Image (cartoon, rainbow, N blue to C red; front, side, top):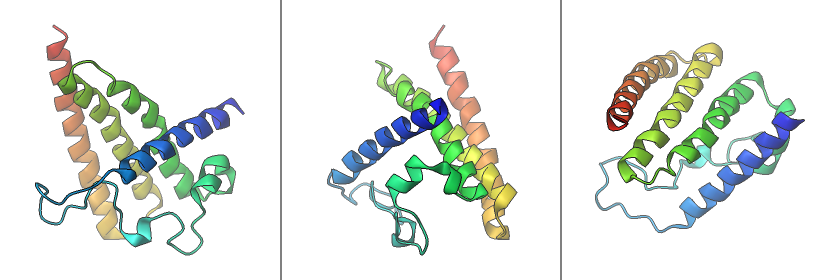
Length: 151
């Protein structure tokens, strides 16, 4: 029950964070070609857009009703949410970025591992393998930089 309560609390904080980010005005100026403005997702990725996709409240209150792949993805994301939020609280902006990105990349690795375990599409599996390799390298770079700053 404690795990579920922690999950619900973390999920609620995440929902508030997403709502705040989405409410901000976005601009395409300065973004790479093909990049989505902050807070925007393809329609098929938005809660409730895909047939059978539960509403956010349902997702955060009961993981028992989820499929194995959904639980694996949610667990990978939520396990790194609080460390990511803690990391961005560092006083130094560069350190906050590095400390927030490290668990963020670990979450991407966890989600990619879930794709390898449960996914069927070879293109997505190859992307997942690339994500794992890239994110591990970036975690090593971030960690080395963080440790260098601590000296």
